[in-house]
Image (tube, rainbow, N blue to C red; front, side):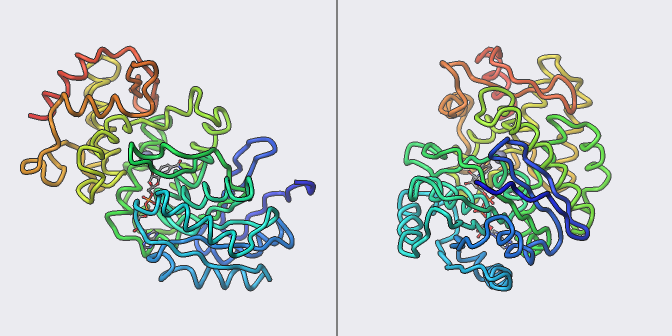
Length: 383
Ligand SMILES: NC(=O)c1ccc[n+]([C@@H]2O[C@H](COP(=O)([O-])OP(=O)(O)OC[C@H]3O[C@@H](n4cnc5c(N)ncnc54)[C@H](O)[C@@H]3O)[C@@H](O)[C@H]2O)c1
Ligand SMILES: [Zn+2]
């Protein structure tokens, strides 16, 4: 862009987190009611740009009017593109629908795609923006807790392949993220809770002070207000710092996968169904990673237990036995879970990479855990 980007400026009570990526740097605006400032911010950032708002049916019913009103109030032209809700839209079909609709709406190189929704919409709309006309800029307006603290920040976009999740995609950073903390009030409690696992993750992986604060204040985070804003801003700051160090995940960014190697295997073992939401898989995965760290003598059993106790206190599942249908449909055995973990795209040259803890609030990336150790560990956990 020719024009220097305007100085970050927070309206009353808003927090601005800057993602420091040189010419791809952008602001995350976090605050109650921040959606109302969307049009003004876009008009300031990219004067004259038109927009297309990509969203899903559920979010459209609750928040599309407000988003359109905010854009109209600042004189920003917009067209809505509404897809079905759920992971199924992160598909070739969903991508075709959105890209064709963007072209039909005459969205051009200098216009903006606005992703209004959870991680599904952010990933899908972001990827569509990355490829239509060889790349259009986009704005993330995350409406789930998971999207506000994780998927809207960092520029990973994409869709699923029949072979696995997120296998087709691109790095495409947004030019702005607007996270309205009030929008989360309409989120189903189970979805909020699942997103909270990613919030706790930032404490467990890199910030003992934040984890300790969450142990004392999680009730307020669930209730909304200043504590929720603080938790979201702290999470975004943590992710922004890691992304700024390692945008393309050649090193440190993998720390964000704490709990995810186990978690993804559990999601796959339950057929990516309602039996286990992503964040719930991550919660169980984080507990398993903590317990494995304790077994390997990296952290104390007391610290490992603290991770599980906190996640259980907010109502997240923490044990394999907590997964719906654990006894009837089952989730497989240690062999099948190991096979699913080996399919994870974080596998490097056949070695499983694990994110383990060398302290509470201190995650490390390691690929020297023996498969037989993990196998034995899982066998005991499945009992
Ligand atoms: N790009 C990344 O870095 C990244 C990181 C983590 C996860 N992800 C992806 O994110 C996706 C999961 O995201 P998600 O958990 O936000 O799921 P989602 O987008 O499917 O949203 C969950 C459900 O909540 C509904 N919803 C969204 N906002 C709402 C609101 N304010 N009120 C009421 N209902 C609302 C949606 O319609 C949907 O039914 C996965 O596809 C995952 O792969 C991407
Ligand atoms: Zn995650």
